[in-house]
Image 1 (cartoon, rainbow, N blue to C red):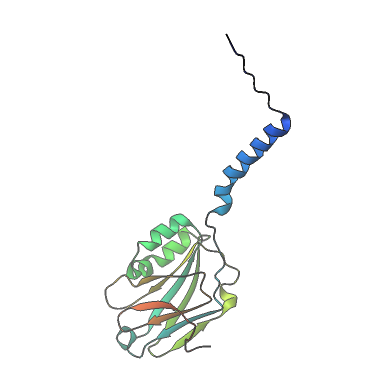
Image 2 (cartoon, rainbow, N blue to C red; image 1 turned 180 degrees about the vertical axis):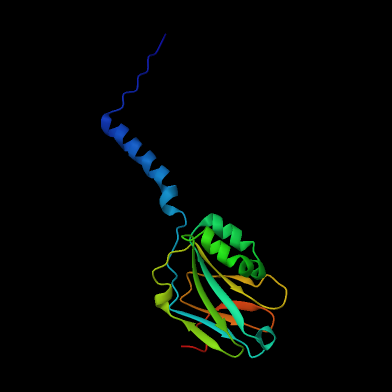
Length: 167
């Protein structure tokens, strides 16, 4: 005995399956990470009295707008970054936004929100041009409401500045 089986799909069912397939395929594009505007309401750079052997220090906060450039910068030391900074800015003019300050030991600088509020970036990296060897590079969280970059004698840290000195 032979059975014949036939499956007939109605147009509405076919449309529903097609819509579901498109929705599932599109989820990868919608749910993945995207460049964001820094959430910083307050961004402060503070140098300890003995920072950088009591010498002024250049600090660059780089907003990185391109993932490939982010990989390159994430592998750089601060000395290499500062040596190639002009070249990087020429090579990637649309991929980088720079907030540069020069700070002296004991000084505190508040970076104004208007300097970065229109920017969208994948990440923020801070480079400090210390006289001592070391990476002197740190990632600054874009999602933090307030950040403090604390420059110490031979290195620096970034922290959520909820109780920082510049309120």
